[in-house]
Amino acid sequence: MARVQNLLSIDLEDWFCVSNFDAFIPREAWDACELRVVESTRRLLELFDRRGVKATFFVLGWIAERVPDLIREVADAGHEIACHGYAHHRLALLDPASFDADLTRALAILRPLSSAPVCGYRAPSFSLTEATTWAIPVLRRHGITWDSSIFPFGGHPEYGIADAPLEPYWLDEGLLELPMTCIEVGGRRLPCTGGGYFRLYPYALSRQLVARCNAAGRPVIFYAHPWEFDPDQPRMPLPPVKRFRHYNNLGSTLRRLDRLLGDFQWGPMGPWAQASARALGGELADVA
Image 1: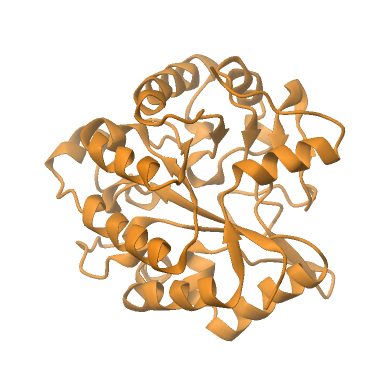
Image 2 (image 1 turned 180 degrees about the horizontal axis):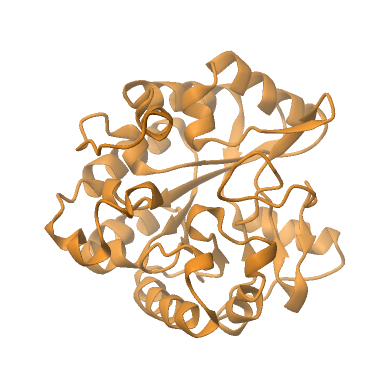
C-alpha cells in the first residue's frame, strides 16, 4: 500500500516502571513486583516475526539487568537495541551528574547484550524538553549519536516542545533528533505515533494519520510498550483520566498493531537515522 517505510519502536519496560505509577510503586519496591515483561515482549516478537518486520527496542537497563536473555533474544532476532536509561527517571528529576550515572549504568548493561552498536536513546516519558537540554552533551559523551525523545507537541501536560521541528534535525553537540511524529490539522498539531494515542484513537483515524504522513513522504515513528499488550496486568488506583488513558483498550492493542503492520511498511530506526544524517550533510559514527 504505502511505499514509505515507517519506523517501529518499542520502549521495553514492565508495567510497574511507568511514570504514572511513581506515587504508588517506588523504585526500591520494583523487585517485589511481578515481572511480566518476558511474556508480553515475546508476544511482540512473535507478531514481528510473522509479519516479517524489524523494530528498534529502547531497553530499560533495570529490565535488561534482570532478564538479559530476553534482550539477547530480541537482538538475536535481528531487532535493534537502543537505550531507555536505567531506572526510568524523567530528566526533569535528575541533574547532569545523576543522569550521567544512570546512562553509564544502562549502557554498561545493554552494550554487551547486542553485537550491534547501541547508539540510540529515548528519554523516559519523552522528558527531553526545553528545560532539560543539559542532557544533550551527556548523551554525546557516552557515544549516543541519535535521539528520539522530543515530542513536537504542546498539548500534553508532562512533555513536549510545541514548536520543535517535525522532521529530523541536529541538536547541539552533533546529536541527531528523530522527533516523534505529529501532523498538522487545522493549524494544530496532532500526535499520530502510538502508545496511548494508538489505543484511544479509532483504528481508522490512526490509519488515516499514517497514510497522510506517508503521502507527504514522511515516515511515522510508532511506539508502544510491552505492558500495552498485557490486559491482565495488576491495576493501580489512578485518577479517572489517567486510569482511562493507561488501561483503555489493552485487550485489543495486539490486534490493532497486527493490522497496522499489514497496512503499511515498517522497519527499525537506526538506518533511517543514518540516512537522515546524510541528508542533513552529516554522518553518524558507530560506537565501538
